[in-house]
Length: 574
Ligand code: DGT
Ligand code: CA
Ligand code: CA
Image (tube, rainbow, N blue to C red; front, side, top):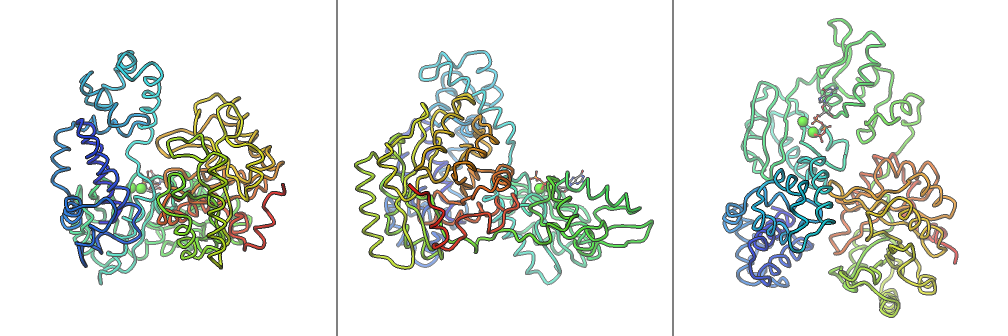
């Protein structure tokens, strides 16, 4: 049980209570608990195992919540949540996955229109029944239809950040079995794709029973769905499914190549084998009946005339051509260790939960040499956004911290909204005083392309804007990108010397891999930043790095890998 697992229990509890119309204070207590636990640097499981009494020292956690946390850690579940799940139909709970539908609206749809499934929701919206409900209207009805189509497209995929730790844990545990010789994740997790449909794990062992029995008993596994001689399919707690395949050692490389995918990449590799008079399948590469390769992936690629290709790039987006001409062999993809700075984060001045000093210390502890504090501008009233006066006062506070710390540079930044009317949320004289300005779209995301482009270009042409943050404004699996013209935006950024961000949060990863590669091709410096709202939020940098690797980026392509002395030269001249 990780802090995130515990935090999810409280979030769901709060959602279900809110759907039932429970006392708002109670709902808020659970939401606060979810956030406190989720943002905590220390593992609550460790606290419980050493001294559960210490839970009550956490802000907002009293006796009752402390007991609940201990129950979740010790039993993996909370009886109260199980009861609530039985009281609220699955279809109503599913509504929370539709963008724009929170617990209150879901409750209204359930109670007023007796809707208990997403199909019924779609039907009601199509028939115009939702617009007339109090608090809904024509626009909301339209948003629900759009949200539903996003949910359909997303299917049951989960974020890489939720899937990868499970795959890593299972692989590590299988590796400990004496019977297992080799074991690794394959499939989309190995390709570090932003969302994952199911986990694929491969192992070699003399006898498949050993690893399969161990997996059946694994603490993360809920149920064995099917088991054959070489393949076992299980459902994990939480619903994600996993295939384990046990293959002979002489086929391990071929199986890894085959089951890592992508399908599109494999089609081309198989064609190359055929062109050489070879047959490629998950057991190996064969000439007639004779196996000529398959023990390692390197073998397999060599047999089709290629160097080994990093899994992140295997999407048939040009990687095979680049491998062929020798370009890939020289490419050293970016790593977490390359990062020197983080240029997007929040503090208690707006919606973060840590002070400037805490964020600075957290960044230092993670080996960073420079950061920018970028709290929200005033348009984001929900997050207590800063107007000119408060921002200047906040910068004074940043200056104070700057004087107290050494070994790290702290930039006075701002996350400045690009307003719906294509003006910036703060006046030029204020922005001119900033060291670092992240310009972002938060509102009016459904505007037509003309207006979206006008907004992006206004920001790019401003002499004070350093970088466009989460440029497409998408939420993975929930909200589509804005109606931009990517090429036009990138060309303008290249012309004006504005950088492009890869927001590393697992729900954003924005720019995505394809767009980031396009930015790199135009020579635009790319920044990878965490958008941390807590000290632990700094740790999502890894997911930004994964996306950058899928874009084929090296350390040189990413501005905040440079030492401070060099990075400083990239800051815009005012
Ligand atoms: P996912 O699970 O949807 O996130 O994506 P993957 O890529 O993990 O796909 P999955 O689990 O269906 O299959 C794992 C890999 O196995 C896939 O990337 C390529 C390979 N594979 C599966 N089915 C086929 C197939 O019909 N033809 C070929 N060439 N490869 C396949
Ligand atoms: Ca898969
Ligand atoms: Ca699979």
